[in-house]
Image 1 (tube, rainbow, N blue to C red):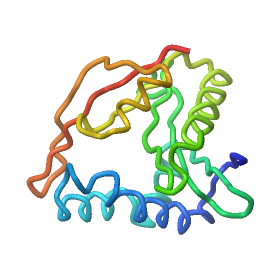
Image 2 (cartoon, rainbow, N blue to C red; image 1 turned 90 degrees about the vertical axis):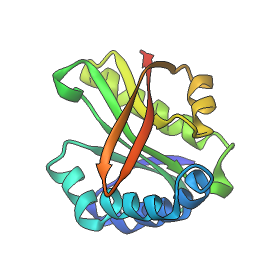
Image 3 (cartoon, rainbow, N blue to C red; image 1 turned 60 degrees about the vertical axis):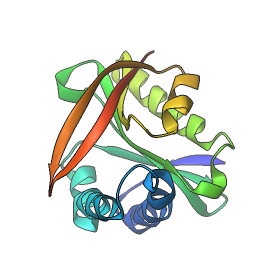
Image 4 (cartoon, rainbow, N blue to C red; image 1 turned 180 degrees about the vertical axis):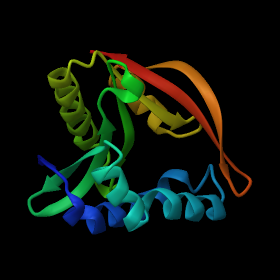
Length: 164
């Protein structure tokens, strides 16, 4: 398994992973309508391109040989603080539990340290089974927030942090 820096040329692969992962990840906790809305909002090609080119997000792909099996996006110096924000972390369902997520988080931690960031931060749905994964990798709940994302949908998140 290797971790490579993603570019706009990898948008199709990132979208494919998101569309294969989200229904299984969120199917029991979000409506099909909210999943479709959020995928369209966050994973449209134009949205991903903007995140990469003007939004300050760095994307990394986990590669099993030539096949992308997961990705992470992060933003160093989030809101002008010494914090790196993990915006997205998704692994194909058949690759989960194999250490891919941990490798991607280690990559983010390396980026953070190079930038002088001292904390990793992320939001995760309070009912997502990934909360346990994040706790096992050293994150703890630092707060919670409800975010109105439009169309009558709400993101009910924990804010989790990990000191470096």
